Length: 486
Ligand SMILES: CC(=O)N[C@H]1[C@@H](OP(=O)(O)OP(=O)(O)OC[C@H]2O[C@@H](n3ccc(=O)[nH]c3=O)[C@H](O)[C@@H]2O)O[C@H](CO)[C@@H](O)[C@@H]1O[C@H](C)C(=O)N[C@@H](C)C(=O)N[C@H](CCC(=O)O)C(=O)O
Ligand SMILES: Nc1ncnc2c1ncn2[C@@H]1O[C@H](COP(=O)(O)OP(=O)(O)OP(=O)(O)O)[C@@H](O)[C@H]1O
Ligand SMILES: N[C@H](CCC[C@H](N)C(=O)O)C(=O)O
Ligand SMILES: [Mg+2]
Image (cartoon, rainbow, N blue to C red; front, side):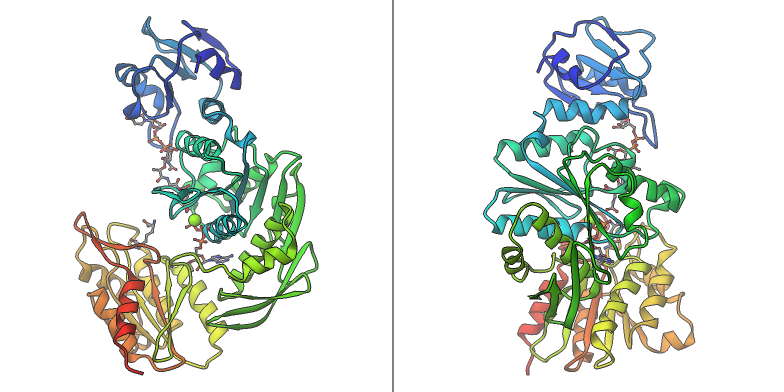
């Protein structure tokens, strides 16, 4: 695409050099620049992209968008000066990749918890409706059936627009996407035109980055503030900040709730480890999900599908066929009659959340056995707390290994054990071999009991000293179940 065509997407201050040249790609990382690319210099959290302009040119960049023009410009390169490169990059990228959100409906999901669940369920549901659909999520991205691995919840603006561009080219009608607070604050979603936004909930998280809860909330709210009039904004009325999120949006506001009357109102009529019976807008539906927070997620999915024009009865029918997202409160029933739940909970808060939900459903009718470890070379402060919160909410805890990375598994286990007082210690044992730990939990379980296997969820590996060894909690369980006598 011609440089001057790309530049139509933004307001420029100065231009130095030829604007008629053909641009072969856009990059924000000098290390990825190839011949004929446009390099956009962005000020980051660690360093300033302006320091890498010469490197980008060395790698073949033929044009540069920047806030400060270099002192000694290269005569073969076109320099474009703008007020804010972070603001410009999304707009440039989306224009370069064919303005994908003018061709498909993009729905963003934001909030502290439930983004992956809701975005993935909407993706699954709309595929079942017969559409080609895209998904951008923490676990994996999809262009209809094609899986594309990811290492971000919301990718950088170049990767994101490239993905959306491919989705549009391949005929996707919808794209469902997780919108992280980082991506809003860093304008990774700049230039995208959303057809809808969904808010789940907000609790303390990511304060290392946002510094205060107030800033974190503002980042989330900015997403709704930026939605166009044509979009919908679906919010959770049960969250104390649910209505704050949408108070300044131009979008059409809808709400969902398990407590108050609103557009999409739900109630849990019966719950068990096989699923729930819910009432949604006065219709009953059986769903294969466990726990009140999933009832809330399902309401968001139901609401969004109805707003997107699907008939409530068709939506409910599909809702009943959906399965939990892999490793998110993923329950397996053993032949012996106990339930094992694989969940990605890898923080004290998430463990509290999951264990409290288990007790809500169990209502004292069985024991809870938790198998948990903590990752190596990551936040050490959470280790003792993870052990303590697990012990407080379980009849038995088996402390084991997660991804030890470059640490010794037993050292990590010892850090966890340090969080236990005398009473807690009585119900805790440690088995470093994760397979053995799961096997022991199964052996200790009786019909009606629940085992929580926490921390690794969908991960299918165990990372030890730089090598990822195949390991899958669910596979281990299935193997144990197949040899179980009942
Ligand atoms: C703290 C943070 O969010 N950082 C993100 C940010 O990078 P940054 O601002 O730190 O970049 P920087 O290293 O200071 O560099 C500044 C600029 O110089 C460029 N550069 C740098 C070096 C070089 O040699 N050449 C060069 O051109 C960089 O490409 C960048 O454009 O912008 C980059 C591009 O978008 C992101 O990849 C990067 O994510 C880092 C790796 C990260 O770990 N982010 C996490 C915290 C994150 O984004 N998480 C959220 C939520 C996760 C969840 O809870 O679900 C997510 O959406 O994934
Ligand atoms: N609506 C909810 N409210 C509270 N907790 C939830 C909710 N939905 C899911 N959870 C819990 O939070 C965990 C993460 O869920 P999910 O992956 O859907 O969230 P996310 O917002 O995508 O998180 P991330 O920030 O890691 O991408 C789940 O394992 C589950 O235990
Ligand atoms: N993305 C998170 C998840 C970690 C999950 C856990 N299994 C671990 O390895 O610590 C992290 O890197 O902290
Ligand atoms: Mg997620």
